[in-house]
Length: 113
Length: 118
Image (tube, rainbow over all chains, first blue to last red):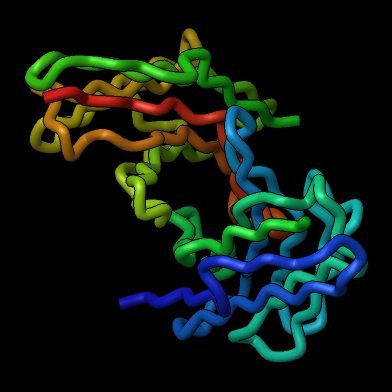
């Protein structure tokens, strides 16, 4: 079974804090993605990576950065958290070139106060 | 640019009623893939179906069926004889040719919340 895990299910942080969201997959997938989910907006792509140390901006990268030092791990970083970054964050992975479904982690619900 | 529209934000039905979720997409690619995912209250996204742009056959899986019409750029999803366990948010999504650099990233619709009452 493909497994995508995320470091926390729930997280509460203060405005201005640096926040790390971790995602690990165990299926040797090249491509990894970070999405943000907000009511009525669906999931929107923040960043993706198709190889170690490679990253590409998605549709809403502002206020975020990412790190991919190892193939199995893809981290999302909020340099200075703001209240408008309160959201559900989902990580996903898929083999490079695959047209099949992405495998999603359970999500991290982040609240910034 | 790709776009997926799910016009229905919320649908409420009584158990055993049928419910149809609409999905309309936009893409310039001739090769693309369409997906439906279910997100139950637990929050995890559950993959339901994938369809490529060259296969317009409708599909049925138990109480679920999908109607893909390229002429209207629609990929609608019907739940027959709904059950309380079908209560969830359902997302339609689109990806382009996967052999393009990171081509398999997904564009999601806004989701439709389905509430099935006993």
